[in-house]
Image (cartoon, rainbow, N blue to C red; front, top):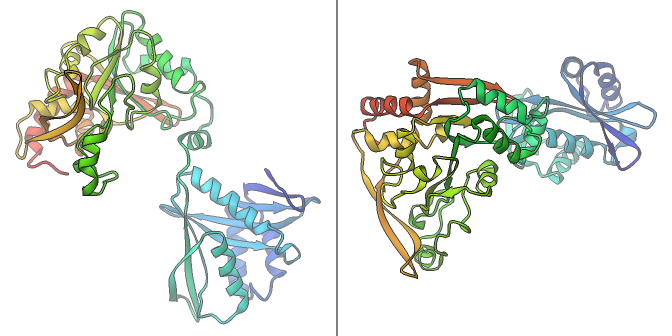
Length: 435
């Protein structure tokens, strides 16, 4: 329950059983809700669907907002406020609470249907003005939605919530170190394991202690004899190939000439997540040195894994992935799926399939003390079928275990078995690369 700053109004989270309150509010606005059958439908809906309410200082319900979920949009199915409390911010407060909760639940849009612009009723013009002031845009008038009455759908994009806000909303309990260790061990990670970890905190729920908790849990699970490896990719590449987002073609030459040279200590990672950022700060963590698709490692096998990382064909057999394969590492997918599984790129290098090709990439490097733009050859990588490969591996009885954790799961599998399986799968199923 949240307090509205004016008139001592409380906004109460959705609850059932507000049908009688809906009847009172609708009857108080006969000029706006004048169709008895429609009002009966609203009352029934509110009685059987969790509905937001605004309550005054005496505990009386003075406003209701009934939401209706769709695939990617949350609808304001009904918004009604006591005529005695119009223009006092009650409707705005209800809409604000509804939008915030819809955003944290993952909806990308909200929308509302009301009478269209060709309706001469001034009251409906005020209604459209109310929603327009809150950022709702008219998609266009629809003449056949309601018999004899024009309608308009008004939509509003919702901001993308932070990962933490979503995690809190969806979690029932905070995730602890002990819970993570138990999940890792149940998935097959044990003392002395060599693991290559891909992670997303928000997809498992709210973790007490954030990324540090995950790092500490990993260290506890593998112990001192174990080795932890994580991808630490920067995304450094030729700007001409950028698509998310692209840059104007005229900028490319400037970027190639001006972008700072790669520095393992300074160059930020891209889309790797907080767990890797935390892990790389640990004393003793080794960096493989690749400017685009590096790995960081800690443990007895760290040097063996990262000591050699050639610039060209950077995820092939001569890379840290090749060393991990030789060490029979276990892949750990913490909250993510095989779509994030870098190890499958090793299978790409080994497999023979139609459309496989080499491309030229570029990065800024310091060569003989001078900053230069350096080009190199690499596989034209394609991870679009990685989720399908992972599913096929599991369906075939591969060495893979998935353990629930919070709102997500932890998956672990043998890297060697998965890569061997993926080579055969790619050679059978890939007819051309997809971009």
